[in-house]
Image 1 (cartoon, helix red, strand yellow):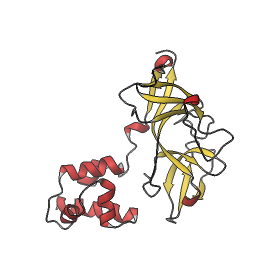
Image 2 (cartoon, rainbow, N blue to C red):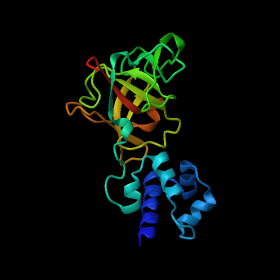
Image 3 (cartoon, one colour):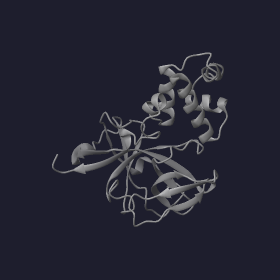
Image 4 (cartoon, rainbow, N blue to C red):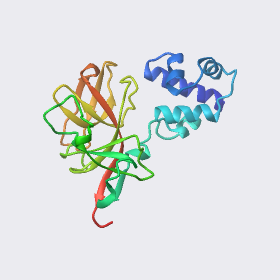
Length: 226
């Protein structure tokens, strides 16, 4: 039955994340007792519950309901956004703040300084979360997805156990900053860092080596023709 299949797929997510049912309820922001009733069939799987899983974990609603399609679809926030070159305005109180920071370069690997001295303006468009920070990317390891000179809107990840596999992140290690896809490793204590450019090899690291992590919410390319 469809209800039982949805419960089975939710259980699959819990097993994949290697957490308890109660921890899963906490992750999606729902009551533990009610979630238990959903999982044992005493409460119907509601649209509201599915939406919480979609929003908080980046899971495809189509996959949850029918099992069809990709479980972790490429979200719309990972699509490139083209903006005119004058999209950065000086009013820093409107929109997402733009910093003169290159997240793939710089003498300090383990920190990004979002200070007022690095603040150069803001971008106010509907697609970009106003709470995000916008920074620059250099190099060709993520081409053609992210090209040299593109900017990305990023948000800090506070819980390293909540990584959306296959999404793009800014990863800060002790001595390096990188922008990579993060893929699941067979060892739960490790992750795979993957470039979009096939000329670059995968990098396997311990999760404990990550000093800071930022999810890339938007990829921004400036077009002088606009």
